[in-house]
Amino acid sequence: MTAGGNNTLTTIQTVSEADMPRGFSFASAHCGLKKKKLDLAIFVSESPATAAAVFTTNQVQAAPVLVSRGNLKKSPGKMRAVIVNSGNANCCTGAEGMSAARKTVFTTAKQLKCKPEQILVCSTGVIGARLKVEKILAALPSLATARSPGAEAFAEFSRAIMTTDTRPKTATAKYTVNGKTVRMVGCTKGAGMIEPNMATMLAFLATDARVSPAMLSRALRDVVSRTFNAITVDGDTSTNDTVTLLANGESGARKIQREDGDYKKFVRALETVSKALAIAIVADGEGAQRVVDVEVKGAPSNRAADRIARTIANSPLVKTAIAGADPNWGRVLAAAGRSGVAFGPERVDIHLAGVEVCKRGGETDFDEKATHEKMLAKYVPIIVNLHAGKGHAHVWTCDFTTEYVHINASYRT
Image 1 (cartoon, rainbow, N blue to C red):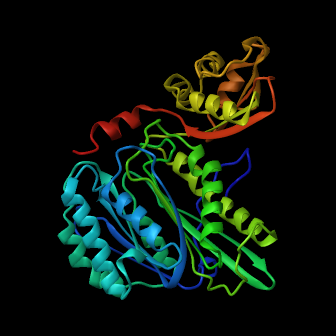
Image 2: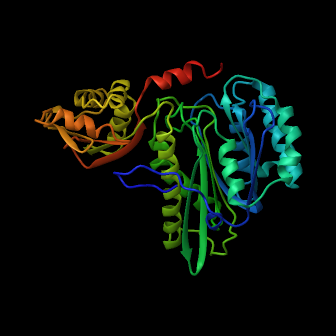
Image 3: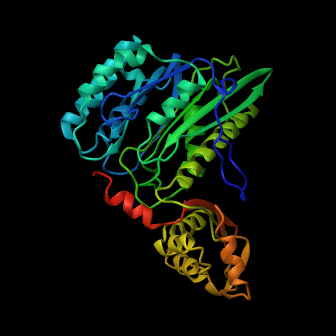
């Protein structure tokens, strides 16, 4: 998958063998948490890797998030693997849930002959249900043995982490440092309960770059703020959100230890992959027909622009108007007005799908039928210019359809 510019939508592409970073292997299985589909997967660095991760900010945090936080703190420079299950979030499961997460970590470490703190664990699915960890533990020996470095194994991994997703989401990037090719690959899952920070989202990134723990963490947090934390489907923050990044240095490129040219190349690659994955989540939002790029400029500050953009992006009235391709710009201006940011409504310009529909706070003489036709596209940009400063922000969302209600009304049944 590659990220498009402001007027394009991301497109899914097959990950090739040439895209795969060196020194990583993957495996997936059906262990019985779901009725038939893949529901357990492992992602392994064959040599100890530097690791960084960003987790949910929800006060209700799942057992695997708590265990992974602790392990990352103990072993940021020698991580070996991530084990993930779908079909059950292992959240709000008390001491039994914590025990299940720890048992999963311990058994995975035993199979890989490493320390438990060198393992990250993730879960996604229904909140509050007991995790049948015995099914995971029984499947782990054969899962660890079956791992492969190939693109197909990675593709299966991306399918195994899905819940209400309609399709897998993958992305790649590469760059060259002194004749050495550095590769990066990533996959994510998420379609609903999406609102930073972050979303009901798991994202796994692997690179054969060699990066110090401090610089890897800085790069990930910087990029996440502009990508995974700049999307929303429904305004709900999940309990299990995790983005992990492992860098094992197998490319042979020199180690990144400071903010130099090599670091900037690495960040560009990381942002390419992360942005593609983040927008793919929005494009696959539950019941979504189209991606909406909300851009706010001319705000008093970047923070103010972001606040307004999120308010517009989360407005049910704006999202339903987009679903109907209705150029109802008043809903956009009204949403901006309740954001809590002070601005002059009489100075605001609004463009919908490239058409100026509002000038200085009032309606323009635009062709409503033609604008409706433009808003039927898969990608609909909304640009709001406050003419009140230099602040700027992008937030990506999707439309809100009746299918979203149907999916979430019967999620457990």
